Image 1 (cartoon, helix red, strand yellow):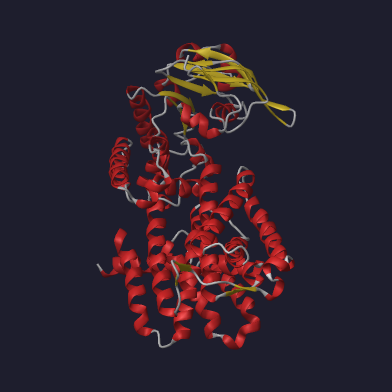
Image 2 (cartoon, rainbow over the protein chains, first blue to last red):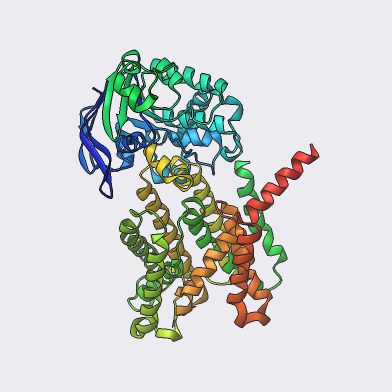
Length: 255
Length: 311
């Protein structure tokens, strides 16, 4: 298991948003996290990347206990994420966003930074090339020098993915990557997620678009009232009676 | 593009003496350079890292009084007293910034406000070492028996220091460290999520800016030969912030232009002497309303738009 939680819980003012969740995410797969609104998906995601601290329980990633560590240490351990409500660096260009994403791979002393040493210039050029390649990978080559605040919504969604990939994460948490996208853009995101697996990135996907979820993931986890309701392969989860009742409505899902 | 702004600044420094008619004009130019030094540092903090300091005059004052006291009362040679004062201020900024910058939000503004007030009160009341409200005289900057004296010598020294500092600051901003600052200003949570230790990088910017303020303070004291507590007071902190905001946040040349404009303004409007702070307040307000990005970025944008139309 790449990421494992033990009895992970988070309460807000006495209300358990995530309640004793013990789950594991194996490496090299796309895991989907679904559930009705308010089921605790985003809270769980925020726990998994260290934005929230759990009130109880532990998070083990790649053999290390990360519980209670600051967010940037989760990133350093190899966890990346994108945000449902965009958290783009709007004060920078598309390329600079991705270059900032490489922060962990660009250690840089104060003297080297201020004196613009020759090695620094070389590193900067390499960083630029790698970042350009990533923009290309997510299909944003044309937006390279555009200020982020001038880019359309769909492009920003992909920019967040490129920025997260720049840190070379082992695990990537995608928070509703297709929310607000049209069918064409959603299909592009679908392709993009599938190609992440070929880059050896394990994906945890929170998404409401069931067609996307069922098509792209190998393992589905259903949350309801902060607890794990069901988990398994997409086909099995889709036909699970409890899931149909709790989440998809009374009728069987049409995927 | 990279080198052009710096070349322009160097050219301005080189050409300016042609337009300086007398000693007084040189004096104003030197003060502009010294204020610009503070603003280039403060801009790292305000413009790039998005943190407000309302106490940089305190660091300026500590640098000034620190070097002055070490030199005048303890007989330290000035090439030692000045770096010692700067290092002391950097340490103080680190000690204050470290706990405060772990908190999200604008706690730094409050903490520096308090620190600045404490510093100016201590300077005004500890009159046995500082001379109290009357100020103290400061020995000139000297090494190996040669003193840096005369308006022309100071002009070139400050000009070279300013160009060098702008060069260093621009390099810093274009490095991964500078990018980290801009990133955490854009979204702290997203910055943390790509591994940026936001508290550490904010602390970097805070300590660097405090050290630059102390250096400029020390130099100002040695240049004018006299220093009063007014230079460490809250109103001076506001002047410094106004310079950065007016010139342009997240623009190093904006900081220089802002320092120049607002150092000149009171010299031109000497009649308004008593209302100087009112003018500063008005400038700050009008900038926020009509060009929130500041003068230089606004002009750059207008220029770029005009270029596009021309093509």
